[in-house]
Image (cartoon, rainbow, N blue to C red; front, side, top):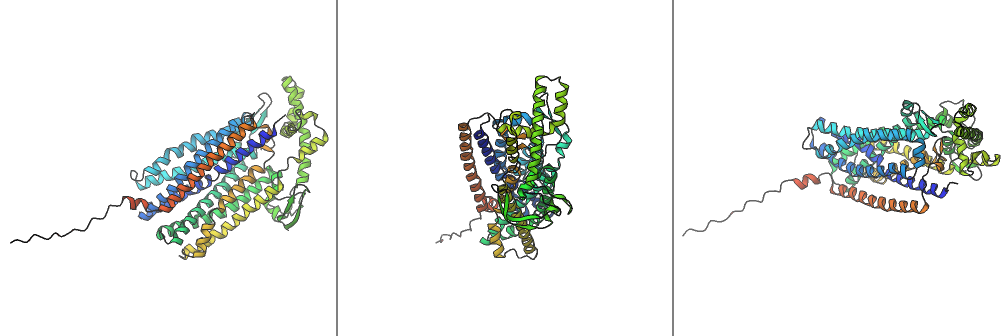
Length: 526
């Protein structure tokens, strides 16, 4: 039997490292293209202040970039260390985008990032701008391939189980690349990163203005951040809506759970704006409903219903029963690979094999499961509804606030009211908000996929390595201590760079003023 403590601790370790890594990724994504914008203005105007602006924010980008790379490499190692069966079972598909990311995007970043930081005096302005653009392109290409891999976990297209190798194998790599879920996740995630960087730049600029320091630098940075952030915040909401639409066909249970929709909503389906979902009662108390909205989001129509949790559980129960038949046929194929009848039965039920494997959480042989156990297991396909319900509302609430926030910032910059003090204080206080929304978005995406490591294909508990509880606790404690120390280093370096200000380099290397000439009186001549 599977040691569920090992599975839970493996999940905890991966969640902690992923959440920590994702503190750095959004800021890196957003700052990279903001540097391109700032340096483009410098190249077009040749005004030294824009060179100073680019170099200052580039320093903060570099600090964040290093920590992001270091924590990302650790995450990739965990697939082999903590999730070895997952890597064996789906590595043919999942590993390809990660390998391409390393060969294409990561080497692109590594090639140009040194030139970006140390080539200011050696490259022409236009050449240096090209280097900065390549760094930004490489950074965002990294996100493309990583989210293609993650999108396949959410919607496993272009692959099939091979009963001869007992593994998932690629059947259509182009389908994997152009997975609609991966595309929706990429544009939504990248736009959230742009919002994050815009809030960061705006907040630091507001801090300088409140202190009355580096006023010209801060106003220019604030103007760029407000325009970039307004466009990005609008994109997040629009593209987030597209992500919700993608769930309708691919992850109906996640959609029902994040809306706490226990029963099918007849057309036109309404949206539960707020309420108190209960896993115990299997209903949402004190719900406030908005008519029609859910139908427009999920189906783009007002004449189609949206399936609820109870109906989806009934579907899961049917698929588990079909999965047991697939499992039985697969065992017969393993015993006699030339058995045409067993292969025919397997082909008929193969798409439900993953559902049959869910029973291995309770029994070693799914064929021995009772109808009551199958019914119980069907309810285990429901993720934690309250966690998803509130994660989505916190994320969406922050997203809507960001639109209002950046619209105000853009207006104030347009009318040259940069020094509006109430807004400057708000901008400083708002710095953590994008990270909060992004972390809850990650929880929504990954926690909402449970109990699946790969949706409908591989249950999470089957993917873990054969580790021990003490080994996992040792690595969790070790990672926590290491990452805690890195967090202190990151924050101190950032604060130190901000405290020095954008003109520190010029002040350090400026020539010392000449001492005033002294007049020596000539001695009297007798």
